[in-house]
Image (cartoon, rainbow, N blue to C red):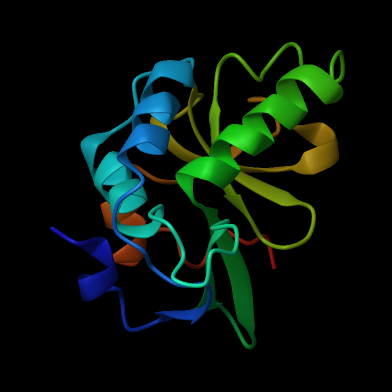
Amino acid sequence: MNLLEHLNERIQIVDGEPCCGGEDMVKKVMETSPLPLPEDYIQFLRSISGPMSDDSENSGLEFEVKAGEYPLSLWMFSAQQALQTYTEYKVYSAPLYDNIIDQIWLIGNDLGDLLYFYGTGKDGFGLYVAEDGALDMENADKFADTLTDFLVNGAGIDTAFWN
């Protein structure tokens, strides 16, 4: 299922261009990720990570999410951006994130200080949110089991932003 064609009514794309393709980058994500990534996430990457029509860098999509009184932003990384972010946290931010970066896969942020990622925490495997400065599983909260649950079924919309 193409998740972008079935977005929950509380979620809409407000910036970025979904571009199919980018198979080489998606394959590199699967090879680089320290954990197995769910198929719905891989399909999502394939639907957004292709080359941009104007040759600009494809960094992902910004979603507006109606959670609470005001709409909030969620930036979902393209495969290229996910790889770049992993490298930044693994190489350039070490040792601050040494204890966690090999246990999670970063998939986005709120254009602020919240990070969204796949990992296994106190509530099992799924999508978690944590503050950038306190990125560890003890401070992370699970908000959905899968990307489909979140983007299509709306699971975790009211808890993913800590508003």
